Amino acid sequence: GSSIFTYGTHLRSDMLSQGAYTKVAWVKRATGVNNNNIISGNTGHALWAPSNYGYKLAAGHNGDWDKVKDNVALAIGEWNFVAVTYDPDVASGTMKLYKNGNQIDIATSVPIQQESTTTYVGRYATGSYWIGSIDETAIWNEALTGAEITALYNYGEPLSASSNSGNYTSSTNLKGYWRFAENSGTTAYDLSGNGNHGTINGATYYSQGADNALVTISGNSGFRMMSSPVAGQIYGDLLDELWTQGMTGADADYTGNNNANVWTYSGTSWTALTDISGSGDGASLTAGQGFLVYVFADTDNDGDDDLPRSEERRVGKECRSRWSPYH
Image 1 (cartoon, rainbow, N blue to C red):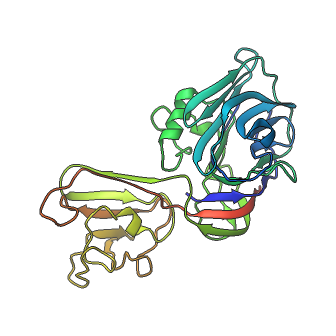
Image 2: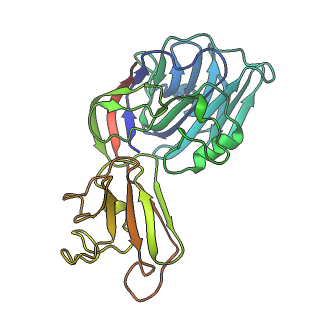
Image 3: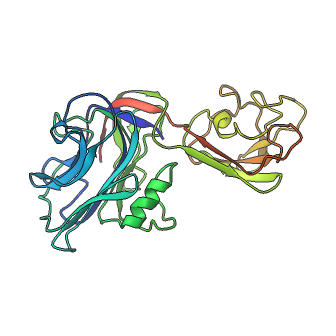
């Protein structure tokens, strides 16, 4: 999905009542001196990597903002998956800090957070801006397990926080989930189903966000259903490692010979695409839209079978903006 290069965002009402929670985000730190807030309340709870902590990831409650802390700084220019969980019912309040799917610190006897009225992403109040990019941000009203945090990290392409899969079983407790994958317009949609959509102010989109599209094709020649993780003119990106034909922008054009190997469904019939170059008929996909591909085992037309093939593609856009989820 897209990422947001953020100098401050806020949610106009608090996403976290007092009690258990999980906060996660993909973050990429840039050069600059600030308090580097990631997800925090106006009082009560914070996840950040401030300059006075040496840019080390930290979290805490009620003025004690480093109850858990990493022992190394977040690297500049690298994407990291960060998370904090809190369960008030375990060991008088247990807080755990994670980076890239691994638990890096734990604290017990952590008092419950004070009630907040606002949750901030990428800033605190009118300052403490995160210097860098933030992507794939989500909040739950329960403490996810370590296995769930690892599963979310390992998804690679978007978190898939809205539906249970494998070790991740907490989609019903998801309070807010922003992928920043709109690529146009002024709304950052909350995919949790709770309607906490965001307003993007002055956004400019460009590649790339934290998530990758991972395509693995195995077996023999034959039909495969695929879908796009984001919106946009991205057929060329998704199909780059496969043989395509019969369309403008394909490996072999043959336009008009009725031998295209990519189709979309209109609700009543299948239609062959005529252009996957990124500019013509059928070039655009909506997020989650499916399409049918006939996969040739010889993906480069050299006479040898090439399956299985795996391809990792960054197909998101990056957004430089401030945004504010609203009700």
